[in-house]
Image 1 (cartoon, rainbow, N blue to C red):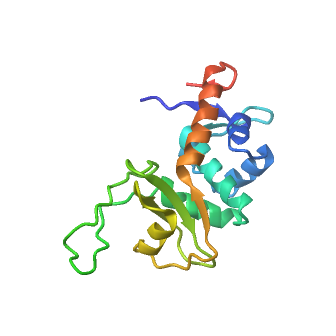
Image 2: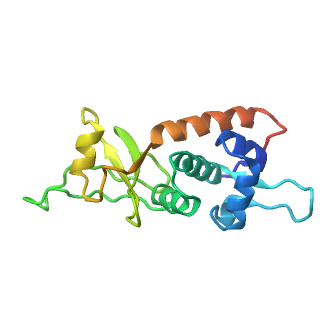
Image 3: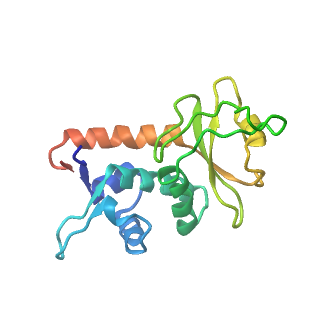
Length: 180
């Protein structure tokens, strides 16, 4: 399937970011080359694909929570570039899976809600599934990652992805903003 490309300004606006910030992140390599089509002459338009726009939205949300850019980039990779196998968190019967569904890179969990947890310091960020009927606190305590959660930045990915996808869909309707 052919990628849909959006003007950099459109993707930045959809993600709630300043275009200069996004250009800086691209210059630092915090948006992957396969997610961008850069202009080859001054004054020409840069383009970014849907995955790149999602990365910007997640990074922007984390930055608004006080997470520095590079850390936000690494955290976004845990959702967009790393998937989840079905895992067992049942220490008593390790061969009995707890029922976490698999998740492909960039996909939300098929059931419940998907959250990105960015713990303090150098601890690795991770994605968790809050299953139907389970609350976020319980899911955090039960997660296989035992990182400190008392001061973690937590992003509700369902909301972020829905918001950016809706904004990009509006842009897709405008022939001036999207290029297929």
